[in-house]
Length: 278
Image 1 (cartoon, helix red, strand yellow):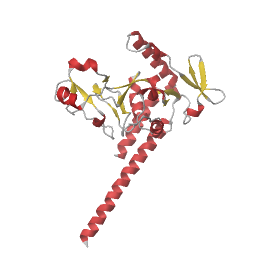
Image 2 (cartoon, one colour; image 1 turned 90 degrees about the vertical axis):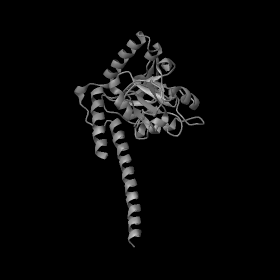
Image 3 (spheres, rainbow, N blue to C red; image 1 turned 90 degrees about the horizontal axis):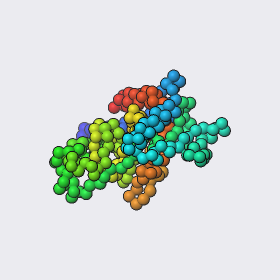
Image 4 (tube, rainbow, N blue to C red; image 1 turned 180 degrees about the vertical axis):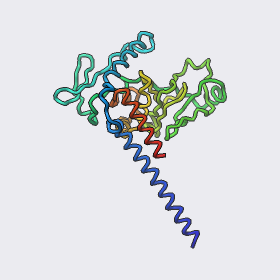
């Protein structure tokens, strides 16, 4: 019976397609995990160390504090280092604590561990009720407004959703600048919707914006947020009825930091490998 065979083949093909997708997803996760552990590209000692990048970030923060764009408390960063006893310590002001238990894996020489808040400014957006959206912000001229639903699971942003904030209302809204990263931190999509944005937008309260102090680190942060290591840590911190991770908790999460030049090579290699998986 030909139709029976066609149907059976169709089902087999569907299963195969599904399997291919799953394999691709697994491969992507492996690539990202290798990348953030310093195993994707070789280390080149001439490219410097991540401490130089942290110094660059510190200078940038000082400038922002001077300009009144950042609170002075943002300069009280912690410093994470490895002691002679091979344990990891975190220096906060005059306090020094052993944080070895929190470090998930060893990083290459020249890299360091740091907190997300050290390398980037984090904040959530503004919620708009459906009524308000319909009355005030639909089909008007202004800055696009992005909600969780406008970020897809494959990291694409729908800017043309018909919702915008007119110039006269923009001062009441938070703005995510171009090249910053948005991460959904609440609800069913928490930790799974991530995008790097291409233009300045206003955004919803369930999204957290990461604005790196040195913008060149943005792409690395974007890929780090997609890594199995980060996802596991994020999921482990979900709390509350709706299920979410607070911005304060997010700020304290760890990130392995390579030197800037190596970050660029890592990003290029991830993109090259992902392209092959398409």
